Image 1 (cartoon, rainbow, N blue to C red):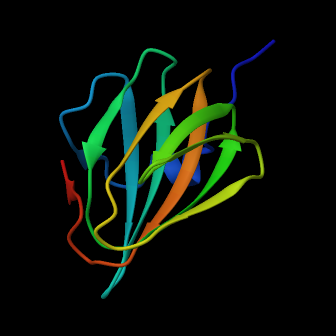
Image 2: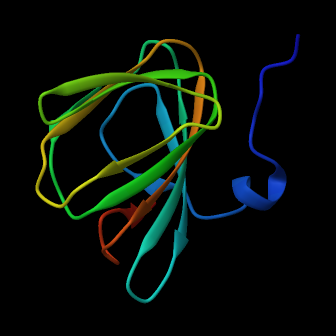
Length: 111
């Protein structure tokens, strides 16, 4: 079975600069926001951190996401909201495609 991947229209966007192993991202930049299309390998770990508000959707795969003190499992089609300043971290349980909207224009920089 072929592994899911974003289409070329997404992969032609600028890649995001970050320091997480097993994570790739493509950036859609707005004046007051960013949307990042993430690919997470099963070995990836997103360490605890916080920032502005974030809304996301799992496009493929399964993701363990801890928001504050609550951990949930998110699968294809599930959405999540992380309020501004709330510490969160994630661990994929499989290969994951996720799309995240950040309520800030400079969360990530393009490579």
